[in-house]
Amino acid sequence: MITLRLGRLEVDWGKNNVFTNHSPLFRATDLAEADYFYADNVVERKPAYVRELRHVIPRLELLGFSLDGCRRAYEEEVRRIPGYYPEMTIGFDTFRQALREVDLDRVSTTEYDGDFDLGEFAKTILQDPAFQDVIPGNLTRDDGTFFENLDAYVVLRLLGENPTNLDRDLVWSIGDVVEGGWVEGDIFEALTDASRFLIVTEGSSDSAILKAALPMVAPDVDDFFDFIDMRENYPFTGTGNLVNFCKGLAAIKVQNKIVVVLDNDTAGHAALQKLRRLQMPPNIRLVRLPDLEAFRTFPTLGPSGQLSEEVNGRAVAIECFLDLAFGPREERAVRWTSFNHEVGEYQGELLAKEEYTRQFFAHVRDQGYDLSKLRLLWSHILQACAAEAVSS
Image (cartoon, rainbow, N blue to C red; front, side, top):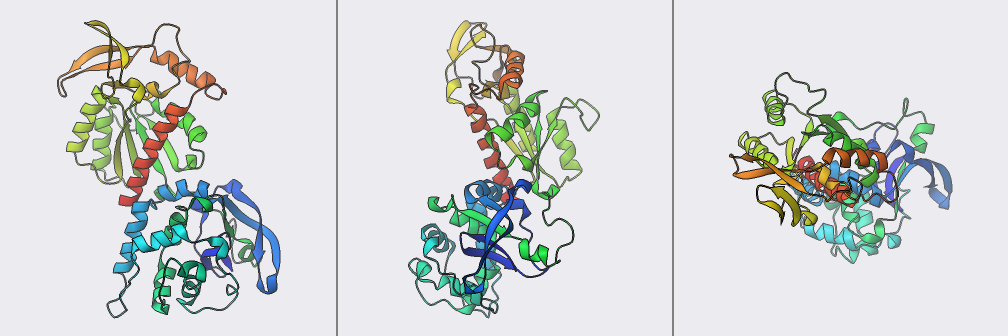
């Protein structure tokens, strides 16, 4: 047998060479010794992939199992129920509440060693007193069949709604099928291109900054991303601007998941309007940098002299998310440059942004370097990626 379990609760299982490969939930470095539970209370230690659920949740989100994605998967499974079967009376919200409230420490596992027909295993588990407190009523074998067909990742994501589960280990017990010779080669598989995201930026250093920050602010998911810089190694001939690049991707109907990161400035706003008019396919996600509280009032330099103004939407580029304490000694400020007639605003630019970038790469691993704004930025991008994963 090969199982995927949280604590002692098995959420997926297989036998011999018929099983789901759950490598996307883990990193290759997650291989460790874990308990294997057998009949007659026999427990053995064998190799397994082990990762705390709190570190699995971000990966589930990027695989399409945000809460919205879970609802969609659940409701799609309900629609697949044949018309001659009894109607499913347990809605998504009831199921979500049940998994949020159930105490996994109370779930009995004494029946796990039995031979179950289709639907009987899930029925047995959900009739456990721990679940009956939150899913009352007599479940049928047809109900059990539904829940056995439901994607295990829906169950895992909903179990993660209970904070007490986040510290539990998710264990993929691969030892028996490997020992039995049912797997040829390495059972662990790297993420496929279909699961990964290509981050596209406009600035010459933007991709480098995002790539360097990712393993420090979101280490659970840094293997999900590739990066392309629009001013270096540009794959198309011509001007090399981001809008033309996106036009090209849409024209060739590229299938990869692509996230286009636009500056939160006047030029970024104009580019966003153009791209929205192109009606990008759902696998191309447009993300503008988020507003920053620190830039609601910020020193600016322009024809009217030095002022304090809101620069969100007019002058916020990725350099603004760096630790501005590491930079030139002169006062930090945004300088207004050209006027953009398309959106009726001046374009602004952070002074000495090249120096802030240089200091970032020199000191990003220093204990005193503030990564809070980059953490906020990556959280914003990850939310957009999770939304894209749901819609793809």
